[in-house]
Image (cartoon, helix red, strand yellow):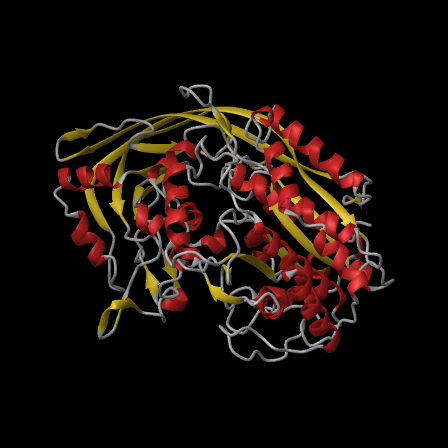
Length: 585
């Protein structure tokens, strides 16, 4: 009954063009996407919204997370099963092939590489023992069979950041060519002036992580500076995940996109070490890691030679594979606007199977991200049930290799099937809510785009409000597939159920999340469980449908908000004429 009441409330809101926003964010200004009233009657949306059910989410998730799918690793039989299942589902829904070549797939050329590393650190006349992968992991993303680095001088470069807009340079002109640089994870947590319990909001986003804090940036700047090797010190709290997440992923086959230069522009060795091993290294070198961490919080920090050397030997087992994004299309009804697109994304891949494990060897990835892929199928079904298509076209894009570095979405964003300046929005799903309905909706990367205002408007009809992410310091905005669209300027929304679970204690989600992170995240135990409550996932998917539907029919399209780092890229993209050769239709 509650669903029907909420639905009728939303339909009235859509028909009136009302701009009432959520309690949490206050009275929102009329934005480009929400200002356009959409005339939609109950017969138009009700069957579509009601088609999204907990039973069907569970059914799709159970199939995709079954042992038969072998953990859905790219380049394996598990990929074949997954892609086949998704294509069959899209066909059964009557959706068109999403690739203009008439297929439901986009080939993603990748190289699989399995590193067999050996590493030695020497400091203070001592050899620091290093056990792979318990103490460290190291890979080379250069597509060559062997990498050798001998007695490379080690230098501590603080957070390894060069950020002119903050007046920050951890390198201070030091030539690190041929050296092994050692870095801290995340951004510098700089205390606010006069209040050391808070972080300075004018530096690196305050509590929120910027891209400078993401591990991918740290290796990118290391390559730009010409370092021989780059080592990140892992710490669970600032990283946002335990070391076992790193070692579990990096000690197996990894992937990157094929390039003509075989990735020779990448730093030769990318490595992590545990905090305990880092402390041992610094102590042997006569340095105090905690004191250096404090020094690294200052703009005047200068690189510190460690009087230590690093040697790496990495054998790379290489193989070329063709992985696949899966894409289906619901073509829009408007003759002109049908050439503009709303893209829903979810990554279909997980970590595959590890036959070296005792007991359970399959990383089923039930929540991460069989659930999100199931949600993508549910949204596709819901849109297919609309008697009248929206004006703009809708793409349903299940991407590969998110777990290997957002590679499927990166490849699509760099090789789009439809022009990105005609792609008006991306809505991403990664790990659906399995703990029950919430009174709030959490926006990852809060404050970035007017899509949030559409979301708030829809959420209010469910008696819900939008809130910022609970832990912006973990950098979740940079860790899922929407980020690759955002980097190219496409307004992107990444939202999840919030933390206020109805009829549960205030700390219910925190306990649930802590338990999942410690017990199941990126482990074989991420499996379908009997105690899941997917009603919250149903509500979230209904919101995502309503946001996409509204954007697909609005006169004006979403925008990045002022001050957002992606706004300039979008404006430049829209100002550039669309090359007809790039319009692959």
